[in-house]
Image (cartoon, rainbow over all chains, first blue to last red; front, top):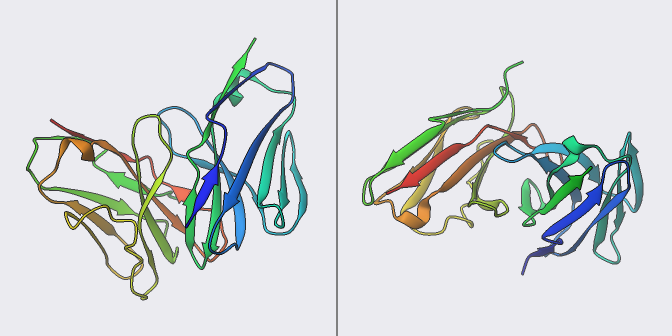
Length: 109
Length: 113
């Protein structure tokens, strides 16, 4: 079967660092994506990992361990505008992608 | 350039009616996806099209749901005999190649009364 797990909600303080974890068990693996979705809007792409290790892009970094079926998204210097849902998604082969339920992040002042 | 567009943006219908949702992908994108997102939930895969290959329909929840795509352009998602449980936002996305990010449209919010 296909299973992607993320925490349902997280709360963090403006200016802090937050780590959002994602674990997956899928029949195939061709890469892992993170998307950001603000309330009432469509998801937008944040990052992509296909090899083990850390990918850094500005305030956002994403890590992947294929042997552990584990990824995390790290957000630094949190801003109020980072309040959104963060979706972990796995490409299981070809074009097929399975999404997790998402983690709703609340950033407080 | 133009992004993914969807129409209508909102649709209110009565239980038992048929609805048709439209998606215009980014020109040249081979893959097109449909997802359903219920309020406060994640994305539920429905179907994807890849070029001229047979579509992957494994996510369609029942035979009331069907989708078509003309070549590498417009796609329509049809829901027959709508039920209240079909109320959700239906998102379309397109992608230019394997293992590329998906570009999402704004979605169609369907409300079944």
